[in-house]
Image (cartoon, rainbow, N blue to C red):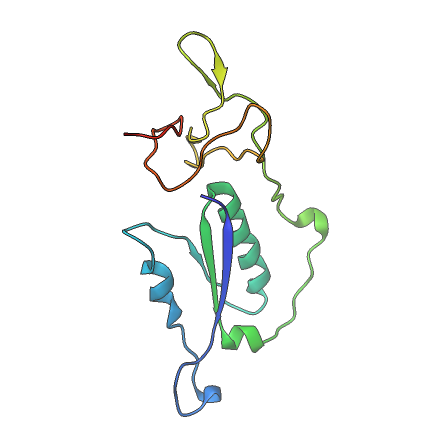
Length: 154
């Protein structure tokens, strides 16, 4: 559940000559090459100039939803060119992350605690705590956990 941007510039596969063929053969691998039926976002630019916006959009999705995102392109776009206006810095989206800074849940007895697996109702992403932050320590790993608390579920 950490953001990750995987950039895959696909090349032509075995053929009579690379200049005569481009390929998007990695699409199905990107879509279905995960364990179980876990979906993954895939962003693909349509033109050489769109590559910049597609990369920003993929990064935005990865950060907002705390998920890996594939950015797929191909040789025609990677080696192509077209006029493109460099955006002004204030036109770019704000990709800063809001890290957890304190407790986010109140127990029945009124005690405030940090629940590392309490999901945001809009994005379903869990809070992102900087490792070592006092009071926000929690367990991570592949063992089955209780919803919200992250405690080991037996």
